[in-house]
Image 1: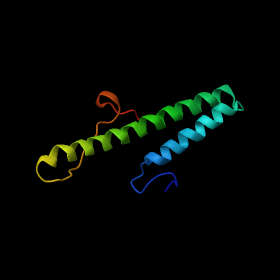
Image 2: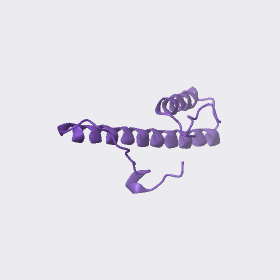
Image 3: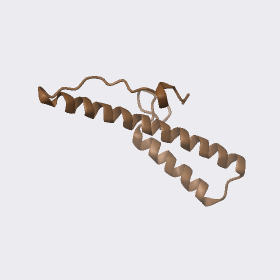
Length: 91
């Protein structure tokens, strides 16, 4: 298992943001060639999208908890859509 992945093979939010920070640092250094900079940029965008999906899922769980607060506080599994408009971004 990749050390950056959790047990389910997914990146955690914190790790995604750490990786984005590393990418930004490398890009800010100015010590990368154009091809590598483009690849880093693409990877950064991918990681930001994945982090956004995790946040969307967390928001959905919170909304479900709030909605059920009128009665008993309960939680149910929330299935977030992948990518924008329900499309998978392939990452």
